[in-house]
Image (tube, rainbow, N blue to C red; front, top):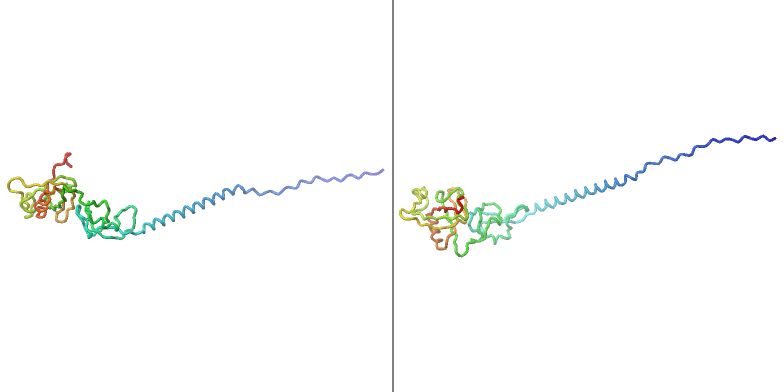
Length: 243
């Protein structure tokens, strides 16, 4: 009888474990791209700002020739070639002085305001010619303190009476009502109606210039009396109840 050999027993082998896989890093790639894009954008903005600043500085450094006032000019006076000069000016968008190339057109215009030596000249400070027409004349009258309303009482457009005196203003240091600049002794004083065109500043002696618009028939007489300093100015009542 044949003996049976017992079958060998092989215990089950555990399945081979797969190695752990590294976590996927694919999700970080979009984040990296965004960081790169932001960096490039910031660099471009910085570069653009630097270029803009350089342009502004360069433009601010540009110099042009403009007109300046060479000597004081009173309001109403005609600008002469000696009254202006050319100066170099750092261009500024906030200022608009007259270019030197327009010098010829400036000469002959009138000062709309008092012009001070050394200041830049702008078009708003000027007005063309007399602007009076053929039926009016412009006469400059120099008056002393006490012979015209003071403290800014006179202004362009005011109606005034130029009253002719028997003697010059302040012959004896007085005023129109004192010993100097006497009013006529009898009868009504001679008067010339006029309109104020401009008023200059009072100088150290208390004298200032008033430019008056008058009829051509009165211009020569007014000019002669002004030269002789035999005038006093009286402002007419304003229509509207006063200033």
